[in-house]
Length: 560
Image (cartoon, rainbow, N blue to C red; front, side, top):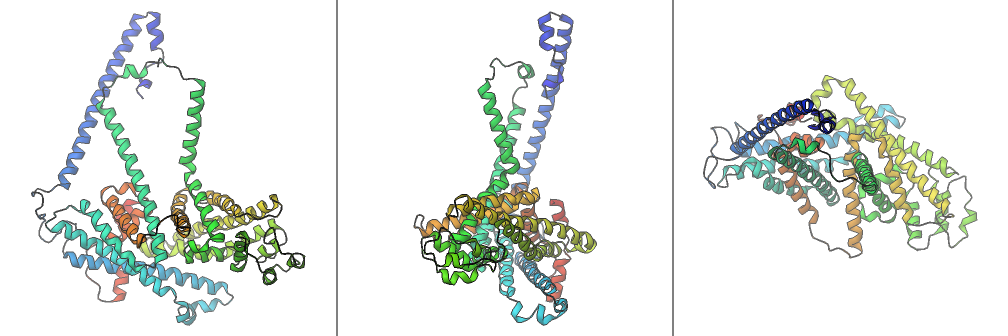
């Protein structure tokens, strides 16, 4: 920017000996340098005032170790009109109601859509069909989620209040780390597979926030160094004595290309690598995946569990019962040609295609993609619509048409992504079999998973990072579980609970001190569950639901 203040003919004017032009240019140079120095001093004073204001607000006038003094009727944590125990209790039941409503709402909505699609739409309005005892299997999981989030929110406020009001005399910002770690022990209410998945997700989010914090501090350090350094404008615009060689230029170009590629599509690359591990484990090592997650992949895909078992046994060198496997072959194929064989190069495509009944691999991939779209659309619609309606009830009621339209559009895009994922995965498997002469190799499932992961480009840019960080912990967990089975890594008791508590403490520290480093979705979610207004306790369950739905969301809207 400084070089743009001066004409490009500075050097030529000096070389030409034009004294008048040189004097004018030197005058402009001195004036620009004087203005830059003045601006630098003003910026340094402003930054000093900001830091002084923060230090004044975060430090107590009391000596270290003494209790913090707060106005009557208020707490150093920020709540007023209630005691710390009452405030923690309010946070518990509000978070419990929210979590239960989200989980139960998704289950009931998916059940209703399934009844409508089953051919008997009237069953969707019959309570025995919609909410019968056979169909409320979500109840235990919804209660677990409620207890988990309720205990986390209430425990966080209770521990933080104690640290701020007792002899420790901590500020809420300094107490966030210890309070978040203690509140993270509420993960004991979750089943172990869910706890492991959540711990991995929080670890990925904590790494993302730590990287953002380090980047912000580095940029701030560069800015302060630039402000404190003397403004040698003439030195900056002077030509460099060293000339850049052609090899250095090529290296810089390649480095910039790689940097731009990682910056623009790093989320897709991360998702593809994670997808390779997950889809390999889906076929070869299903025991390393969360059972619910593995069942979801099986239901979304066109291959049944028996066929997956046959492929896994064949790749591991175990014999395959061909006579029993023949019943899973597609009707259009004749299994007699391969039933009598003992050593098969791979499980025949007649078995792999039996869900669609297609003879050709290309048509099988297309039909599998279309079938996945039909099966997953109701599930993704409930995922996009129900949480938004529960957590943003006022917005949904204020403009219901826009809410439904936006949810349907997001559902169509997400379902297209998952259907293309399944179709490209099946096409990659069949294609690599054809290239290798109908021979099977376990590495093909790694490569197919990476190819299918590239379908993430269909999703919106804002959702790609979310999906990549959702799948990454599952891939890492599967990889570590594989190493543990082979006794390459030790097994640590309750490692998932410890990891969850530590990561929860780190995220709450960043939330209280550097909220800008958190992702928008995570920041608004934490704010929704931990930042509570001071309302009177409810007198009934219906009043509790009404208070939660009618909560003001100004703070969340400000974050967004």
